[in-house]
Length: 238
Figure 1 (tube, rainbow, N blue to C red):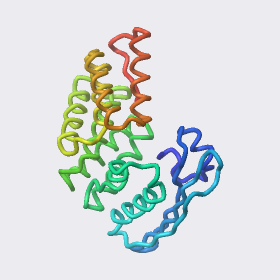
Figure 2 (cartoon, rainbow, N blue to C red):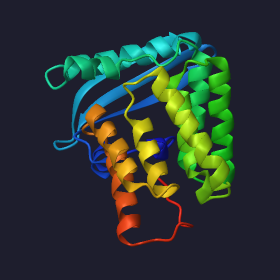
Figure 3 (tube, one colour):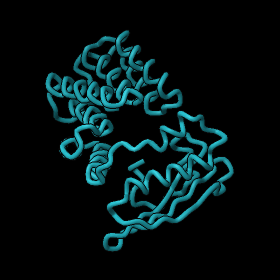
Figure 4 (cartoon, rainbow, N blue to C red):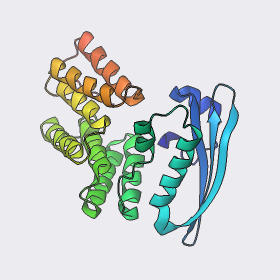
């Protein structure tokens, strides 16, 4: 989603590109220590607004604001979400707003996918972890960053073990996360060429998040590498 940051986004086109049936868009304005957010939920098929609201909070309350927005959206979609899905939507990953902001910066640079940006992302994820050592999503982000680093400039024998270690720590902190299993699956296939082990991790990811789009992209990419018989020096970028 970071690819759309700072752009005038057509919700229907973005939703179709992402393969989703509904999309949340919004604008954030900061004046002093006050954050103002306007958010809209759009039905992609009909291109109609399902819900919209405006919020105003102090910067220190950004995490509770995120929770409220997610909760309001979950309530709007309550007929489509199970109890566990509602809980997942409103889950609070950290109580430290600075750790949360550092995590978001890490994700922003990770999505830019350039060597210098990946290293910047690693720095931000590590800073988020330093602020909150129990922040599972920050470890998941760190695992992602180390996992793609060899595609740009990193040494695979150093990067992949670090990715795996961060992934396992993320799962120790929050066993409900699906994405770390997908990262492990990619690493098993891409680094160890252990396709049965990789597929087992993907299955775990699908069990936790059956609709996980990123999980499906990773699995398809790694199977393509396998079927085309690419050499062990080839590295994925997912």
